[in-house]
Image (cartoon, rainbow, N blue to C red; front, side, top):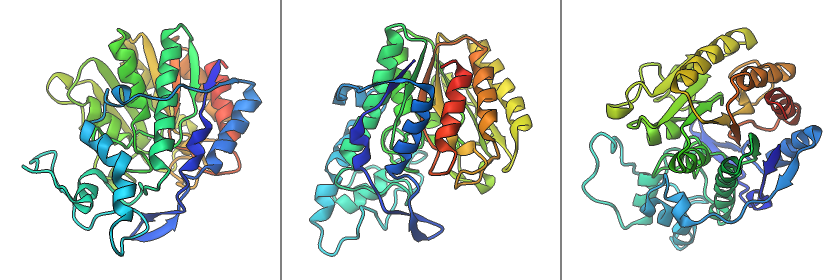
Length: 343
């Protein structure tokens, strides 16, 4: 088994983000990388650095003007007189997916209101480069799967599953999972995504919601009282050609391994019916009992149970790192999951 990782992901180091109406210390910090690498070392996996990602690969799932915005927003923002520490708008294009605006602003403030979905995606001078390195990690993981690997771990940071085609949100700028899945799909591999992050992968859902060629399945804390709040409900099944190709399994906060494995069984049955050639596992270790977000209560040995249950289906699996934040057992939880998957 190979671990894909680029050290350039460390450069993005936000000190804070906005939650509950105020600035709070960000848990999405470079220290996550060292904790995850400790898990990799415990399993004894070989590290491989990915090649730089091209704009063409980013455009597999992201709109060109969003990429242009993200690449240049810090420089443009820094020129504003009396601007805040991070790019953020006071005006948002609310409801634009249902009633799109007829115009697109030239103003950097207006573009921030168009492309930044919430206060938890602070942009720094280094954000573009780190996000590109993270996306490259996932894309190269897909390449290695196409070359015949059966199990690959892509250590992606910043994470990606809240980013949609043209919007950053929830610590996410590029949707690493979607990029990998689309790369596999375009290479002729029937691809399913299983998202086990404690937060619903609303960006991934949005990217594939109208399509039947990629199946999206998510197990997560119920959004009625948990981020991202507006998406992740069981009623979201896909739209048009994609109807029936999105499955959400929201669970109550605080659940343990019994309820989790029951939901996982349901997820795996739906994936088996889709009959994928490859599985992209959007891996959120924030389901752990000691994760700062306190969504679920999965213990370290139980991550192996989750991994074994997924591995028993026999699909080649690309493991893409999503959430999982600084905690005493973060590396141990990763090692436990990877061992269960067969590393």
